[in-house]
Amino acid sequence: DQQVKQNSPSLSVQEGRISILNCDYTNSMFDYFLWYKKYPAEGPTFLISISSIKDKNEDGRFTVFLNKSAKHLSLHIVPSQPGDSAVYFCAYTVNYGGSQGNLIFGKGTKLSVKP
Amino acid sequence: DTGVSQDPRHKITKRGQNVTFRCDPISEHNRLYWYRQTLGQGPEFLTYFQNEAQLEKSRLLSDRFSAERPKGSFSTLEIQRTEQGDSAMYLCASSLRRDWTGELFFGEGSRLTVL
Image (cartoon, rainbow over all chains, first blue to last red; front, side):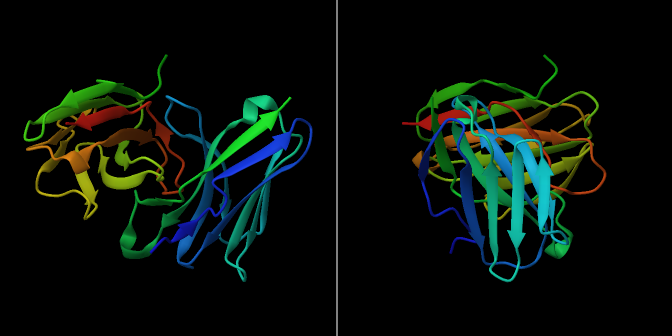
């Protein structure tokens, strides 16, 4: 049973346009949702996060929206650049049981930004 | 480069053999994490250390797996009697944060192929 679902395995966007990556979750017990970016042959890199008490967080071209009633998270990239082409994972921090290390990841969405 | 370093980057072994992976975290980071990623999936939490203490282990970490961080610096992950299902990318990450926010610095990973 997937706790974090990224239903789009891939997304193709034109350079300069907006990229919207989506994530749905089932467990409401979390403190933070995060987005990680992964290039081939590299480890994941932290991109942006949002606390469970917020509904929006912005960092430059990246904005994350959290809709707790719909259990939905999205990442907006505006404007998209070819260097944004990577696999994007959403993840949340497990907060039950006093966990201090468990991140639950989705399967990822491969973003391709075409020049 | 002072990022998280993992060795070896790729290991091919025969079923039943033992393998060991090493991780050198970012020097001032006291928290170290091991994750595993299989094809088409997001990373999955295995275990976590604060300094030399192993504070949390996932149920994925079977008896054949053992992780150590003897002096609170580098860590090793050993897999005994490898099985084909152990084939995966083993990711190490580190963090300096005192509070658990999910922000981790990942290494490039050690890819294990069990024949």
